Image 1 (cartoon, rainbow, N blue to C red):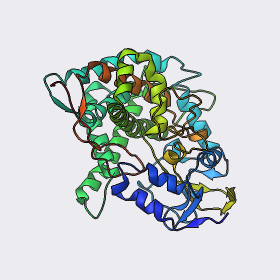
Image 2: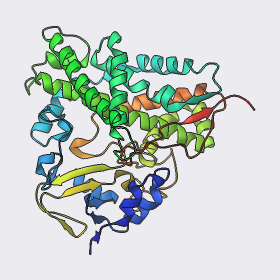
Image 3: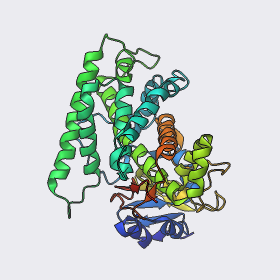
Image 4: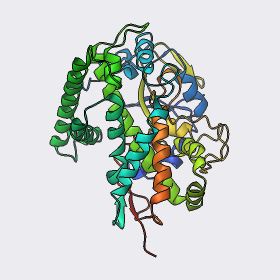
Length: 406
């Protein structure tokens, strides 16, 4: 097979005009499982090829393995394990998972359900008397930081600052130097520094003071892999705050948008709340929160669909395209909460699959169930809604919904 070069389809996917519906362009891209773009390296768009690469030990998450190095966002800062390779990645992930979920802490997410439901309903209570709400600003953006602060054991009086820092960081992710004021980028850079510094201080305070929060547990843990450094604990906490925020805000917003576009499914969920479990899995396939893994590096030459990707090359994985691959999913452009064998790529796959997936799933399940149960005859104000600029973290920047009325 001859690899397609300088793929014009990728340029159109990255253009904002495609943000509302990139899926026809993904179908074009899949005609060549591996394409080459001068800025993005090798672009892989089909399910089986993406899955194979995510499980291939020759694929690196460390930018230092790129032949054309990428500038570091923060020089000299300890990075989270998601940007590391084995064995260091595996060691740090094991240490985090000992306190975050199965097998060592199997009841963590189940034990948070009461607080999750209370937080969700408290946010919905604020809708009282409003004919129009913004599901993103009024709900989805407010939920994950509150939940993650509780998980980490952040003092309640600090939560307002954490919300502000995460908001400034997320605004800077979509920074466009041609249209946005530099202040937007500067606020994001400063927020990263402030968040890292504050988390480091909280970790330091918890040494010798075991508690229920993840920060305290990590700061006092001497498990079989040893103990994380304070900088590693802060980086792990920051990963939960930022990556968790991105994932859950988009998943809730995309989920509510999809339900409003499929009113028969919305009605089913209202009367069959147990439907929410397979429904969220289908959302993760059909409208995932993360569309693209923008780079990985080849440790050595890798052959993908008869194309040799040379050592040091940048590899871009089009997860959302793989989720709509007809060679893997029957009728992939149909939203079907009853779909079986739904091994989607919504949380990635392999050793770097989302380590907060269990919490993200449950947050979204509770959020959508309660929104559908409590909103009064919700209707979209605009379809499509305005989307955030990023093609990587794709979701509405606002999702205005009217309720009540005739």
